[in-house]
Length: 444
Image (cartoon, rainbow, N blue to C red; front, side, top):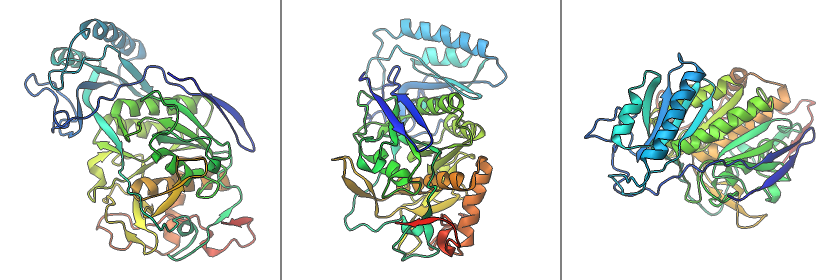
């Protein structure tokens, strides 16, 4: 594993992160056989919680422990199975795709969520589940970026964030611009040396591969929308890349939980509660474990913003968009305020933001730009807005941040056109549309 140190500076803080990798959580390449719905162990009856999942990874499981058991009991169970799997899986192959089963076990502690990820045959999985301290088992699943399409002739969504209606050409914002707020981008990594980031970005964690950079471009584009000097909503925020998906935009539930574990531990160690936001522009099968991790981070003082998904269906059918504690963001075409044809909808969607023809950072050079569409592009507008409002108004409560986002959106009087009944109609806005009235503000 490559070793990389990165230094980033804000006007108030100098911090040093070392890229943390530990043991990479392998993500097997999906095949037609491994993507059948659902996989896990129909013959032996491994009792998985997410039995309707379509994108399961054969013989790979997330084991979640009951809240009523103490850490010593959970730790003893994990230690026993780490040793047992290291022995039992030697030379053993999956009966589904014939790959050798991994001998490593990974553990997570995200607040009350204590879990481990491992590969096991049916007999071992059933034995693990029989322990009193195990609450449930989920099949590990593939997590992926919300597929984005590159188009030419972009229009910017940034101007819509400070205007009460479509058609604006300038973005008006307060010069605090997210200063002092840390934004965790849980994605494909960040190209940290891009000029847009001005030394404020670092790739701090990698759970998927040997490349300590962004080889996909998705995460860099997202980071640019949150805090790039040109394209960003919060232009002075500190940007921390948490890489949980690789070059092909593919990761797993286990690699994502590892990333969220890193965010949780970092927030606690660096006292970033009430001073951090987190963006997840990714999608996967419905997962109780992932949703619980999102809710736990919210309780820890991290504002969790997630994309609604690009399947033109109910956002409650997937994770993390269905997490009760997430701020789930749908996409509009900012030139018309029309719901984007691909955007998911439903009661889990909290707000909409620009997601069509969004220009941001590219990765082919340190000045490259790229135009993408998707709720993956809408979500970072709101993550950036959360960081912006936290810095401007000294808001530290996640509940207060979410309420402020909703209040400012409703105040414009604009609502999403072509929306689906039961879906929030609000379009995210920073409140500058009514003019600054003596406030110090900038125009971009």
